[in-house]
Length: 117
Length: 110
Image (cartoon, rainbow over the protein chains, first blue to last red):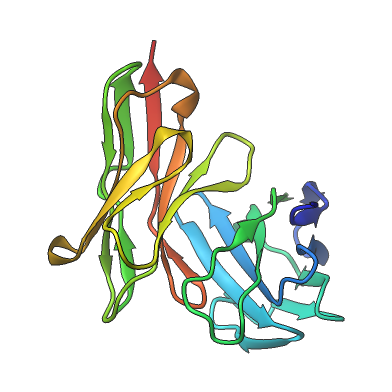
């Protein structure tokens, strides 16, 4: 079956512009995650959705970052007023976990490479 | 505190040689541990996972990992490395989210 898909695969934007990154999880997966991968920072957790709610937003680096999930499926990560330090690969993952499940295997998308000029 | 440490940032081995990538974790309960591989320009692919039971876990592509509670380690091994194994390897601690190590970049010499 289809895996996790993300769009766009690459995004180049100018400093100060807003960007939206999209994630389509595997059908039926209730949990969805956003991570950021940048040089020198490794893979950082951003936000976790269980269904449409986000019980953990602790990884969002500033209030310029927000995310939503609709219909228990597609998620959008929005970065407002982008800065150069936002340049990174943004990875989405989904998991068939039950609420609060521990150690559930996550399936990752190919990522969106964001470059802020 | 929950954390994962991969002490080796870069490792270089010759093709056909054995490989061991180190991973240490800090967690207050029984850990759920994963190894992922990321090839250049690719997403993360799961190699293997440890939940409980046998401490030696077999994965894909000939990889295995051994869980040692006494050493808080989950090292990844492969008896004979192939050139196609060149990639970055991440160890992760699974709670409801992943806590990743910083990764080990593997270079394979022909």
